[in-house]
Length: 318
Image 1 (cartoon, rainbow, N blue to C red):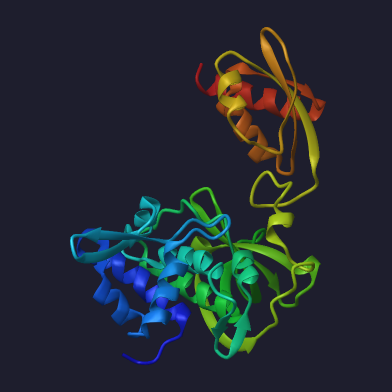
Image 2 (cartoon, rainbow, N blue to C red):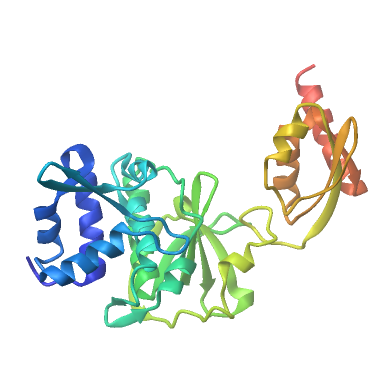
């Protein structure tokens, strides 16, 4: 086996487990994948994978059956990343998890700190693989560019004219939102006003380049902060809303974390919430899930939009 670094060997190990019968590997096979290291080194590597690390749970579980030792993945959630024809989302998840294990990641002679791995892949925990070869091919290129600090050339439909344009982008973070993946990137130059969101499934072509860039520091780009007050994938002006919740929806919403909500007060017949949102369509869509139990108190414009939507639904279903 050719010499590979620790990151690559860990990735290979996890992927091999997912392809193995009964989704587990023998101790001997694990040693082979890790390069047959010395005994002390082998135990150190295994401990990194089989022990909890702060908020990250252990990646592998060690199983003893008589004199035999096997390793399997710790969480059944990993298995869903293997559905469909591509396992790239699983690899992506692996990068996030392993970023906590390593002091640094070396890609094309460029050192990437683990905290940057966390900032490159956000909210990737329940994304279901789509059986689309073009999408998978695009996604592989996006991931390579993200990990290797490489600029991309993509063909993408313009938001207003819908005309397909070729744009040069600096990839920052791949974000899961609902059932899609979005690439947050700088268009042309790394300036705040050039920040854009590109839906991976809408990319018509993706071309890798050899042009490198320096990944911005945490003060310049922190996706968790950027999306902290967002009510969706698109970040806009923050607005406040107040509404009452009646009926069965009271219990449901009391168990949810939504739109930076705050329970203002609860009465015998209803609960009153205050929350913030940045995208009115997204917020109205959320409210309509519980529409029969919702009364908007503030603001007047939001209440007007809510009422108009309800009237359209009634007119269509009269």
